[in-house]
Amino acid sequence: MSSIFCANCGHNWANDMELPTTHVPDLLGGHHAASPSHERLMLDPISAAISQLDDKITHLQIVMGRFIQKRDALVTPITRLPLEVLSEIFMQCIDVDSFDLHNERDLTPRLDKAPLLLGSVCSRWRRVSLSTPKLWASFRLTIRPKYQKNDVVLANTWLARAGTCPLYISLGSVGSYQNSMRPLMEVFARHCEHWYDVHLSLPPHVLRSLSVVKNRLPRLQKLHLSDLLDDSIDIFESAPQLYCFHLDWPMKGLAFKVPWNQLQEFKTGWCSVDDYLLFLPLAPNLEVLVAWLASVEPRHSHSLIQLPHLHSISIRGNLAYALDRLVLPELRSIFIDTQGVKWTAVPQLTSILSQCSIESLSCNTDTHIVSDDMIQILQMCPSLLKLDLLGANSCCMTKSFLSQLAYRRDSETATTELVPKLQTMTVDYVPSYFDMQDFVDAMQSRMMLGGEGKPEPEVTRLKTVEIRHICGILEPKILSTLRQLKATGLDIRLMSGRKDLL
Image 1 (cartoon, rainbow, N blue to C red):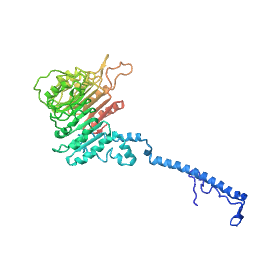
Image 2: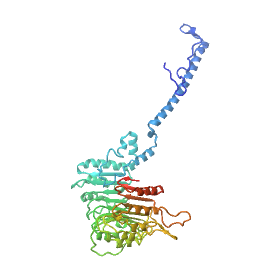
Image 3: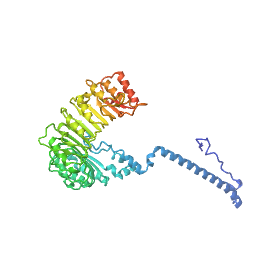
Image 4: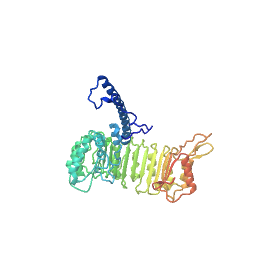
């Protein structure tokens, strides 16, 4: 019999007990029956030994059980997670980029992505994934006529698992075809009461096959259409909670029907200035507006348009005709991208800025804007917190401009002529115009504020500065100053591609 030793003390578990011997050996192997007293002499030691062995077996079983528990805790800790915790972990595995129709990847669900991947690991994970409706609430699909039967089965199964959860639907299409895909569209139509965020890039004849959903969209809040439309599509005319509408194709007139009056966010593809100015009065509750405007003067006269709730506007294209008819008292953020159009909108922009307390200004142009124009614009922005000067806008970084951007102190006052509350700044580096030393000096001046025995300045310390598109090698003195600024608490980045040189 092999010995079993304790790993801690070396105790021999197998040989620490001698089995009892009989006190009446003459009765063994003989023909005489044992008397009751002799029976007790033989059985009592055996019973005591068995009892001791049972105690030791029980003790060993307890020790083994503890070792098994420790082993299981190391090998499979996830099996002890409560199901609701495991379900929440699964929710964090959903691909956040999978709902983007502009993503170049195929929109068809993949077996190597959540939630399909999670259900293929083990039976327990499959049960949890199938019992978590939110995992199935986002569905994206690229429609191909030759796969219609398979897509019908897939969509039916997927959306049934989502239950009554708000649905995020992305449907794209490949190629040009005349098939209306009606059986597949009927699957999505059956769940239209649960549509919440819908992104469709479908030809008009396919979109029209969803006409049965009209007046059945009680939960729809976001709608994004990415294909050419016509005036016969009115299925989204009644959607009581719709507040966000994105339209990638040009908006032609007002033929397409949505509840304009209740919209809070609208984004349109290229459109004429006339269509843009005709639409805005129908959407007085807008808070966010993104528009791409063609470089054509308006053909009609337009009265002033008041948008009392608009706080963010992004204009790409011809800015000159986009702002001069607007009244925007609550505007806080403006993004401008001239898209190759010559910069001529300084009067219109300064007029808009004079009406409000702008906090974020981002300008991206590929035409030169002189420093005097930028000074004039920024003089209208005393509440500005964030400034982005991108593209050719960085050509305004002259000594004159930077001297007014810098913090100055004289015997009585301590102030700056431009954007005294500025906290965040992003600029593109153009060596032929951009005086890096003067820029660094200006940034440094806005970090060295106040001090012992000095009055509290009316200028806010900078928090973040990013200088992009660095090429070549900067002077050691400039790099040293930038690193000193970083050490004083300024989050400053000197970007060459994706690499931070600091």
